[in-house]
Image (tube, one colour):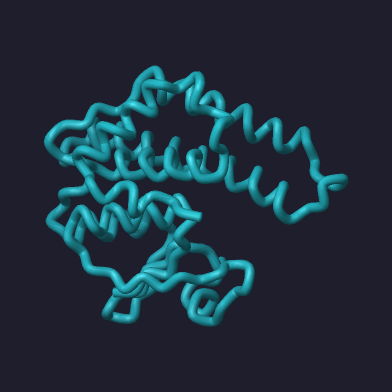
Amino acid sequence: MRLLCSSTSPFSSKVRMAARHLGIELNEIRVDTNAGPNVLVDNNPLGKIPTLLTDDGEAIFDSRSIMHYFHRMKGKTLYPAKDGKRTEVEVLEALCDGTAECLLSIVYERRLRDSDKQHQPWIDRQWTKVGRALTHLNAEPPKIGKKLHGGHFALAALLGYLQLRFEGEWEADHADLIAWARKFEKHFPDYQAMKPQG
């Protein structure tokens, strides 16, 4: 299978890590979403990554759809079997993905607009959301037991993206999340190589 992705994307990182954990082989194809390459827009009308191209010619997007596809593909091992636990994991993943979306909004605002045209109230609003989410996650970091699940990979990807794009802006008040990332790496040694990279 082919995965259209980016090395900097937290959503790509989440999917790549989950695939590695599950033993799913992927041919990773790096794409520039700003360029809108045909291989991407012909398979995903939104032109977003990650997009998974299966051996059967099916295109699957976005990252959560791909994660659930992997879950079904590999004997339903990426999410808990019990409904209550599964809901907890799905909410965790949604929180981490939503936080990553806020961070991406900030990055795009800073990168794509001249400094005199950047809308600081928009940036501040997104950062407020990020702050609330990180405070919540720091107070209640997910436990890591015998099995890693989709929420773990979402949080690991989010923390990797924070380290990449917002170094020095969040760490001081979130020591438990930094400790969580170290613990996650013990269970997933490929973390440093597969987290978002510049």
